[in-house]
Amino acid sequence: MKAQTITILGLGRTGASIGLALKASRLDVEIIGHDRDREAVRAARERGAIDDSSWRLGKAVSRADILIMAIPASEVAGTLQAMSSSVREHTLILDLSSLKGQGQQWAERHLTLGHYVGARAILAAEALADGTSGVAGARADLFRDSVFCLTPAPDADPKAVETAVNLGTLLGAKPFFLDPSEYDNLMLAVETLPGLMAAALFQAVTGAAGWRDMLRFANLPFAQATMPLRDDADLALLALQDQPAMLRWLDAVLEELQEVRRWVAEGDKERLAAFIEQLNLEREKWLDERTQNEWEEVSKSDFKPLSLTEHFLGRRGDASGL
Image 1 (cartoon, rainbow, N blue to C red):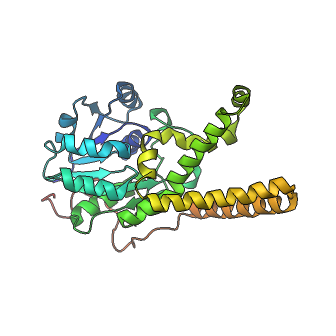
Image 2 (image 1 turned 135 degrees about the horizontal axis):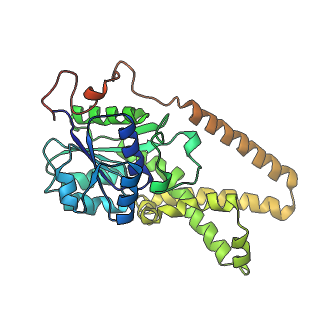
Image 3 (image 1 turned 90 degrees about the vertical axis):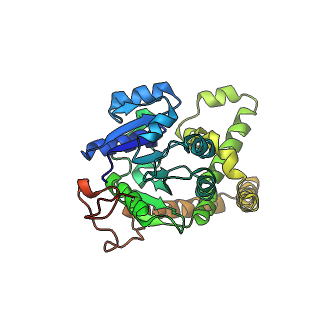
């Protein structure tokens, strides 16, 4: 069967952007939205990201051929448990939250029907630091030239995985497969660690004498450096998933800070300036590589472009569904 209804759980920037991208594709599906925040639902409808909404989770889930979970990792276990009796047998459950290994375990524990696939959109360089969030920051091209990281279980249904790949392609992203545990380990350094550093920075500044005057004049660098605090719902959970690895990353940063502190204490402008210049060159190289976006693991022969009517639930000529 061809997907007729796509339900999006979580109508923040990611969920609403998915809705807008699906609308822009002119795919012939109904898009249902669900969010605890009624204002987010209202805004998503006004932006045209969804066709309809349901306040009841079970009703929203039961209508879905494809169910997209764009919610914090801290809400995944409870949501999977609450919706387990409403999931249909053929439904693809695409979990976009930030914790892949634990998400797979929660799905195995709570779901008896449906096909769970973990995924995460790694945005393109130009969308990394625009500072927008929520429905107001949603845009149909948010995932253009991004990477759609897929972390399916070894026994995942191949057609469910193909459907997830096709969805990512429709959004404008390139597929990249990774083991769930490997993904979580990598994200400790580039998602969780920045969040803990943001917390420490904000605490240090707000705990200082005269902090109100400092914050009054705080500008873009401070705002960007503390931006990870917006994901506060997941930060503590993510930091404690692998404590030894997290401690190693924290120790590595503290060691670098001690070296920087020594140069400042010694007034060693030459070394400090050279250190910063070299790292800025490395950062620019990284951003250029992200702009080139040459990370695709799936060859074109593996997944050929499909027409809009072929994009979901099954291969060409397969009308049986999942």
